[in-house]
Image (cartoon, rainbow, N blue to C red):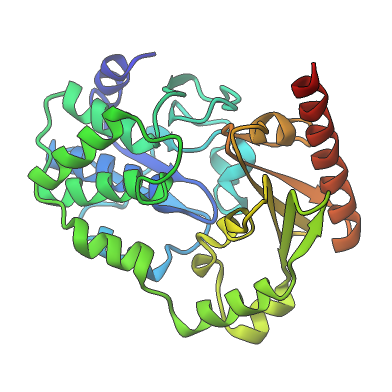
Length: 320
């Protein structure tokens, strides 16, 4: 389903529930709130829900809405590639997703209808195109939401998923009234004291594998409790090991629900999505994730073994 068809479907309905993924980031929230305000502006009843609390640094995306108490008649998932990402708080909607808007090539097509653009740098690109297709105006508030999704999912336009379209859309959002300077400051230049504390502890966990080609860090519940940091303050931490000189694969493990959530960041030589898919996860070629059950050391052993196999396969291919 293309964005025009998805837009016509979405805006033909009412009592619409927008779902964001657990541990929400700027793309799921930016895309979700952009759709919410476009729908409300069209006179629709709509609301947004997430399993986890919305991080404080995204407070500028939220506005007080009226008439949000209703039984959902149409459910749209935003930036959610797999039902596991809904989280426990939204499990009631697992079989009720009518439309999914996404940009992850690993999407499992769980929704009745899916609008997927794997070439988009962020789901915010898909959301913006949909809003344009139905002729809804891009207000300054919507522009802030879309710009947030674009900027956060591209590392402030530094990652390889940035395309000319991504940059054109970002420029369009500035023209529509997005406060890019303030958003960039909040997203990329401001850290709480607890975030600094957890980042310090995390850097002390760095482990190197395969002659420094892989760097690994981990975050335990105890570390979060000690520093006072919450889940919402961990955005961007997974990029730290990949920033180390010579590292081709950066691995971050975060303790969660009896195991560890793994975030993988790679260079152009290793397909992170393919690697994580073998472990039950997915994502993008340069950024992907999965969940592993077991103790910290068991999970480290499992993920580093998979990374080692990927590096060996690449080396063999390069030698041919």
